[in-house]
Image (tube, one colour):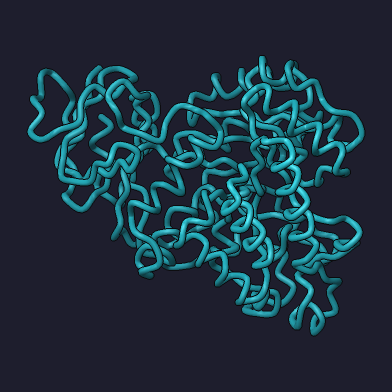
Length: 438
């Protein structure tokens, strides 16, 4: 079928487009972008002039938990949460059970994603077998099965030699290596950022240097190998300096920041609810100077992408002592509103920059389709409502888990609709688009 998105503001940074235009979708492809496009038998979706039509958003760091941890999330519930959050595609980390370190697990993920029929899913394969940091996984096998990048996710690549070999082999297949940068000896058994708040509350600390030291190591190895290295969920100001230095030297280093790291600080450990396990994540919430550095990096171009690090956990798992609770929060259904409210409406970044961070750059880093509305491109489209008033309601989220620190927050800006492969999979009634899906 044909669908004509009419009357909105089209913003496509990759094509240099920003104006009141129409977008014609023919089956699963973009057929035309221009003014006054003829209806020609298409289903017309009338948009408000302030609605923004942009390339589908891509979250390059999520945990879908399946196989093996379906009590937290499934590929079906995770991708439903993704489209509700405006994401047409997600890249899922390999920390499943079993670990995604072989073609069988990758094929299972791809199959379940196809069956779910929601957001596109791009698997990320493990760097090492079992993510144990000992022997490289079969990278050729993972690539052939559909993996777009390599990572041992929550476990940093253990040794410099293993990271070097991973970068060398991944480069042969055009894949980046994504590292959870953390020196295990400095992290120890820490559960929160090392600073005043953790000390006051009696929590064991994780210094920012634990992250930055590993970033420095990997930047050096990326220079040595000429391969692409990506810093996952960066949080420390010293890490940002290392990335900026690497970029200035022409090294192939990119990085991402999660919304909770440009929004919250370690003060959330103490208030409004002390020891709230929904503010326990790794890397941890850091001091305001680190948070402000992440915001500055998003504004000046040092940071390449916003990624949620969507980490669902069952209610019972989080309802324990802070030390014993798992790290991580959900993020797919709050990222757009937090980005609008804190960055765009806060005057930190432009709308164009927001789309670069959430669509154009993730597609480029992972070398996956999308990130543009060019004619012939996949019809993956996100329609944004910049002034939509959003109240975060954890209980209403599509994710199977509800572990978010943003429950009850009032935010400005949200998602009006999400189109994947020409199919409108989400339409926000609050934005007045429910009837458009008929």
